[in-house]
Amino acid sequence: MINKIQTKIYFLSLSIFIVLIDQFTKYLMIYNKKLFINKDFLLFKLDFVENYGAAFNIFSGSRIFLSFISILFSIILIYLIFRKNTLNLFDLYSYSFILGGTIGNGIDRIYKGFVVDFINLNIVNFPVFNIADISINIGFIFLIYNIFKNNR
Image 1: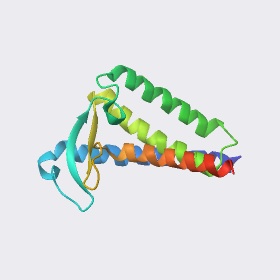
Image 2: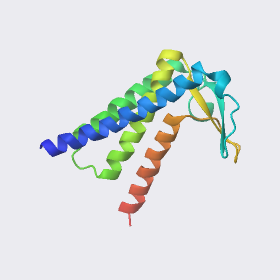
Image 3: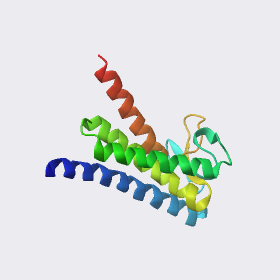
């Protein structure tokens, strides 16, 4: 029993770690814009974008709706991590990554009214994104992998 609780706490801690990294990088971008903006690295450059929507700027200007969705999904994911006993490691990792990203972007929406995006890929024309977005995508990749792995 203790091992299951420790496992659940580990995965919740992973989500919290992702939130902290996400918020720290956004903080650095907000308060050091002049230092970081247009810094070009090999595969990406740093920009500063206030995203008032969700992915690809859909639902732009729907702060209350998107904030509600962030809170709702966070509650559902916390429930799944703590209450679902049939989850495998891929499920737990995927839910933890998605939870960390959802909370990270949710904090921005609730407190700032927009999500801070700052990573701009040089190699393809793609919307500017952040650490929370990366985390959510990693979580979805784990989910998709697990679905295909289990359906063989």
